[in-house]
Image 1 (cartoon, rainbow, N blue to C red):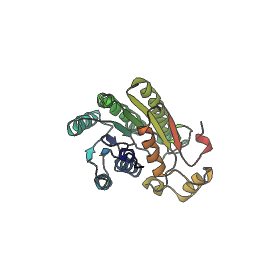
Image 2: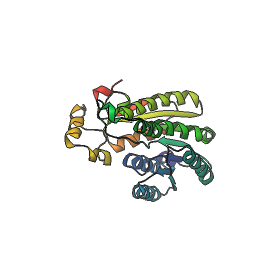
Image 3: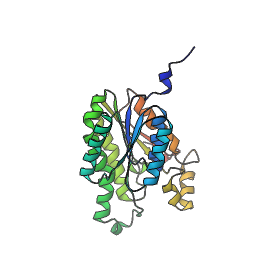
Image 4: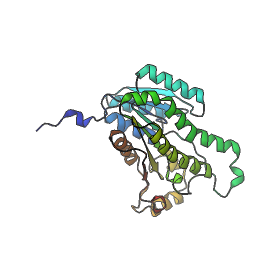
Length: 259
């Protein structure tokens, strides 16, 4: 029996936006959505080479790719992004809030976490996703099956990450997910993926080997998170019809993140 060819492309005809699509995780998500049939816009700020590589991968899937330069600390830049995508595509079915910023400051070093650093982290990681969700709300609701997926962190579940500001921003993003799930129902589902350390990323490559090994040892599966697993979970959320307000940790099974 021949299967329905549409089953192989569950996102055919859909338009997605992945912020931070120039990075490792965002690029992996964008490629997975394109492979599932979606046209994909990606935002980038400073990593133009990564943005170009992701765009080429989207096009190689036979899908339309769109590049948008975005500083999500700047409300005017967010407004411009909304207008550009509305003009270029006329719709938005999927918003993946992946772009984020962090800095390595030990929790105990309170003096180094000054107001400017705090604001940069929270404005990028929390205010930006909210303003993007608000800005695209009309298009997402008009989709008839809109989806938002926020990329948080296990640092937002347990007090362990690159800094207090980063953990606080991701904890708030997790709760923003739940609040938006209420606010945007029933037309838009809102869910969240919370990675731990992710293997094969530039961020993981900048960490001391001892830190990486510790993360692997603490994980019950003996390995840290994988880009492919994160992207697959995003795909699960945006093809589901009865999931909203949920958070999935992808970290190799860290006991501290089991809630």
